[in-house]
Image 1 (cartoon, rainbow, N blue to C red):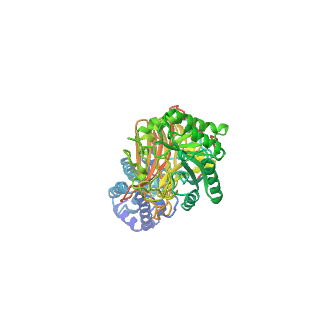
Image 2 (tube, rainbow, N blue to C red; image 1 turned 60 degrees about the vertical axis):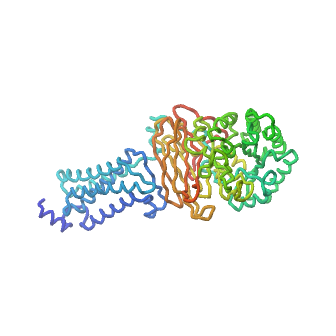
Image 3 (cartoon, rainbow, N blue to C red; image 1 turned 90 degrees about the vertical axis):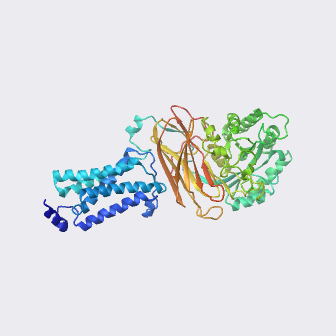
Length: 603
């Protein structure tokens, strides 16, 4: 075709053998596609911007072949449409440079966009798609003539762009059977069928050193949204005559506050601390008797003893486990303010491991201590200080991760109030539920279900009411459903996994301010170190972070935390419990509790 003929063709589009009836329509389609592509590449959540409101933005950190195909096919389509619209007025070289420049600029913009990621591999895929589109145009003109190239290439583009990466849990039967099988270890039976309950596991009254009676404490806990509260007065303040009165007061409070689940508990002076090491002991109703509490107080409390020996703590833990008998429903024990009396938090590791080895009744520790309203947060007035309201044991590569490397269940996402009195003095506290929150995912609204949830690790904790319904999951090929925090999976080394953190922020936090989370961090705990991936967030409602990576054999746990940045004080944080990873034929330690698998029901 001569230049004159081509010019006439561009002017009189209906006489040309194009699928598009006019140059105006071709330009409209091309520019519309350009606008949509740009929107999807430079916004943190283009789906919500376009009005669908439900699509989660996935941050793809480790580029896969299918991801690169999607980038290439997107720019293949751009180059085809722009050529169809502007060839004749612009040369193919100009169009090619424009499309390639667009691919480069949008990738650079993604450096500054939350939930998005700049990658050189993505940029190269964009440029490859542009070159492929222009090359196909030139080749097809010589083989088929201009008229049929655009429809043919667009059909190919749509086919390529539909070749997205399959979900890691859905592959063909042949693919699954050719690879070593991933499997859940002792799955939690109520996943997808339970409910979130706000629980304060550590509260004091006038039965020991608290300033308020049981009724007043529970009234405030109800007002601040608690579903359950554990009354845990100090053992050394309760003698044999006090315990019946203590249990009667709790029973009376249950009748006065039927909307609250009131758990019978004690604060135990754990041997060999002589009063410096504390733990809460929470009892199922069937074991919360005068005889059980009296014997435990008399036999195992370490306050005022002449001899202090860790063997007594081990005996106590085993005694509590034996109380459950064949039912498997035992008391639950967790260390309180674990580093407060230590010269350094690392000292807790050996002590905890020695006691926990005796029985799974010891489930973990309070990652966030109480006394959050005091002048010294947590009353950590010694060598160890809190970090953003939390015990430094929970920091990446600190004591929590050291304990997880022993391949045991250790739960630290616990934030009780340790309430004694409301006030801002050195030992000042917030009311239960006013600032510190522990959310337990339980099978039902009952005390026994809460204790099972605590035992299995199906809980998270936050401060200030910044977040709700936090779920950490790990999914991979061969699993019938994702593994949730508190569970473990056996996983072949080198397998692709998808790690997801979902949650939502309430409209306002507990201080009445607009709620938000500024970033979410995924922590991969390895045998020697912790790898961290930080994902900025800019939402005030639903939140979803996705991270795909190849897990090597040295990864032994995945956990997560989130942060609200504050200019005038410690940040507000939330922490999840881990999903433990068992690889290379290792087996998880038998976890206590219900091991019956149930079909997954989406949340």
